[in-house]
Length: 475
Image (cartoon, rainbow, N blue to C red; front, side, top):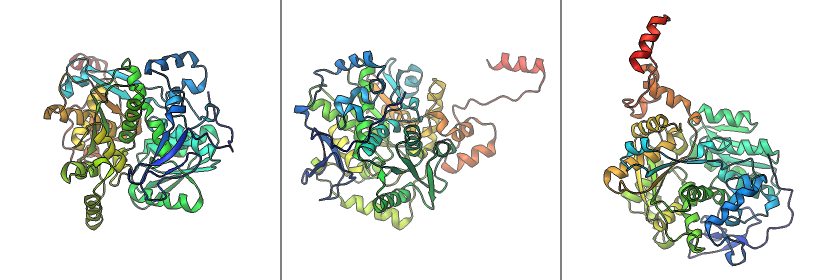
C-alpha cells in the first residue's frame, strides 16, 4: 500500500529546522529549504527540533501502541512508526512504500565465529527493505522532503544501493524522475539492474564514486535537481530509525556495541544522532559503543582516525591531516578498491559527522581485508542470512575487535547487515565456485587467496547410483 504527500506549498512549522554542525557557527535555516551545506561556513547540516513543542512519548515502549495502527501505511512503515522522533513533516506529507520491515536476529552460529558467548551476537538485517538495502530508511525521508519542496527530479551518485532505492521510490510513487550517476565499472549488476528496471535515467561517467559525487553535486546545483545523497540531512533522519528498531527488538534495552560498515559514513553518523536525541529526551539512560569498519581497500576513515589522530574534538576538527591525506590520494592516484563495492569510497561526505559520532559513542575504527570480509560473509550465509560483501565487514570487524579484546565475549553486540545477498551474487558465486578461473578473475586480483568456508557444488555423473552415493557421502 502506498501513501504519498500532496504537493505542499505551506512550510512545515518551525518545530524542525536545519542547523550547522560546526559549534563555532551554529547557523540555522528553515526546514522548508534545500541545502546540503551551511551557507556561512560550508559545514554539514543536521535536522534539529524544538523538542519542547514536539509530542514525544515519555518512554520508548510507548511506540508499541503504533502497531495497533498498522493498517495505516504510515504506522506500518518501520521509519514513520517513529514519526514523533523525526517530525520534520506532517503525517499527511509522508512518503512510504513499506520500508523498515526488518529483522534483528540473534545468532549463535555467527557468534561462535566471532568469538561471542551464546545469546550475545545479533544481526540487524536491513536487506529486507523493499529495494534490498538500508538505503530505503533514508530515501523515504529524503523523497518526503523533496516532495514538500515540489521537486520533479531527484539525483544521486551511487555505488549501487542508493541508486536502486531512489529509482524504486520515484517509480513507485510517480512523484519525480530519478537521475543516477555511477562510475565506470563500479557497480554490481544486481544493483544496476534495479536502477534500469525501475526506469531511472542512468548516467555512467569515466571515474569512480568520488568522481560521480563531485559531478552530481555540480549538476544538481546547475539544474536545480534535488540531491538525495547522504550529504542531504533529511536522508540521515530516516536512517536513524534503524537504531529505534534495534531497541524495539531488544525490548528497549541498549546493546553494548553497534558495529557498522563504513562507506560514506551516513549510517554511523545517523546512529549517533539517534542516541544523542534519545539521551537528550531521557528515553535512554546510556548509549552503546560504536565500531565503524572500513574495507582495507577503502580505508580513509581508519587512516585518518587511527593513524593520523583526527578527532571531532568538540567540533574543533584539525583539518590539516585531512587535507594532507586528500592531497596524497590525488598525487599518487590512490583509488578505492574492494570487493565490498557498497563501501568503495575514498572521500566520505559525512566524515565530520562520523567523527562526532565516534566521540559521542566512544567509538573505534578498524579495517578488514577482502579475504576477511568474504569469509565472514560465508559464515553469515551459512547461518541463514545472505548479505552483500559490504555488510559482512561488520561481522569481520566484530571478530577482529573480539580478537583484540576490545569487545568482550559477554558484550551484547549488534552487527548491521546493510544489504541483501542478491545485490552482488557474482562475489558469492566466485567464493563458492569450483571454477578457479572465475575465482581468480573476480577475487584473486583483490588479494583473496582462499575460500575457507566455501560450500562448493559436487560434480557427479548423471547416474542414479552415483548421485545417491554422493548424497550419502556428503550429507
